[in-house]
Image (cartoon, rainbow, N blue to C red; front, side, top):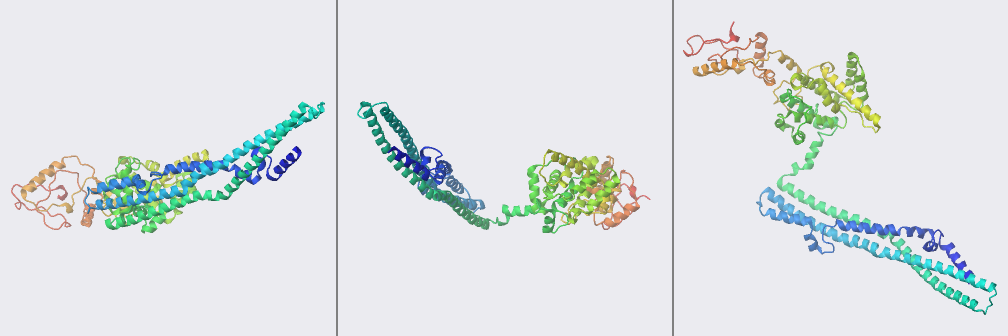
Length: 605
């Protein structure tokens, strides 16, 4: 009988198990063993996701719609808006916007409550049943089967040992009728009955466990659908919320005229100036020189040429941000920033730095570096000229424009302390940088060396601007900045530098006829002012002759060199237009008896 049982167990092991581990493994095939290994991870996943997802709910779990909505933060926000709205004028723009926002927050709260209720019903509850009931039941059957198989193996060992002891007692001379033989036989029979009963329980528990495993396999796809359904519920919630917000925003913009000033449209205009390629910017705006470059140069020519530390000292972040936004949205409203040259310089540096490709281009980076490595000045200048000729046309025109301005800025280095070297140090890394490459520390060191070479290249471009970029340049290319009072061309600047530093009286500034006492007081005032040591004239005076008297003044400057400043007085009683030459002094007796008759030095001889 024992041989038949052992033979049956071998058949079970051969047909339904791998025999790798004791207990349950001997009853399972390879496929079911893999299914069994997925039970514990599936239970943990369902439990952890259920716990975290439950924590994401904002409303009261298990409550109905009304109770859940009252507990939502969005509903509290809607209530606060409603209370605040009562204190405002319902016809005011703020009152209308607040009223609409209150209604939208209420609607969003109800959409959120419906979402959470659906989530509880279709995802949270099934995950809870899976992690707390279904999978634990399967694992419980597994543990029961393991215990029964262990007990069965122990009992089979005892039965085998008892059978051996019974056979050995017969061999030692104990007859079939002896007391010891009878006792041993009874023990063996009792063990056999226990083994048969336990075997029946093992088979029953094994069948239940196998049924559980097959059931888990068939429902595993439906368990995966819980997570897919979670994403579908979330997508529907966000679609409904977005639809409500779009409708409300459209109505708000229509009622309050905000459609043209929305942040999205401002960002669209802003993106066409900063952060886009030079060619794209010039093409979209139909320009020859980039708007930030021309605007910043014109503003600096007006107010910032004598500012110490220009391009080196940082501007306020808020002012710089507002300047960039104004330049992108309304470049005609930049006058307010002229008084802050450091912010203007920062906006120019920011534009150059945010270009996707440097103004001096990635393709010519190695050529610039080779030109910078040349020691002989003539060869270096020739190499730089050759690299400049290979720049794209739009890059060349903007680089020429910028270098001409920086060369003029360097002429004021005694005041602004910005030598060509200092300018190159602060602006060079924004004009040329190497293409991004992944590398080790050696490449980083090489990049540091190349930055020094970039400074050398930019410094040489500034110092040799007139040689590398011959000809005059009109800084006010687009004509948008005609309000700037400085000369716009280099040739005009050179002509104006020939004049003495003192302001010269011109016919355009001849005063209108005034009574004699007024003339006397004016003469006294002029005499007093002339005794003060003369100061250098501002750029606006020496470089901006009035347009109406330009021909006459140019002729006067070429024919008469003014004498050093001395006490003078305006001539009395002059008639004629502003552009007419100076009238001779009136003869004696024609004026007031108390009026002095001294003649200005500029009219003598």
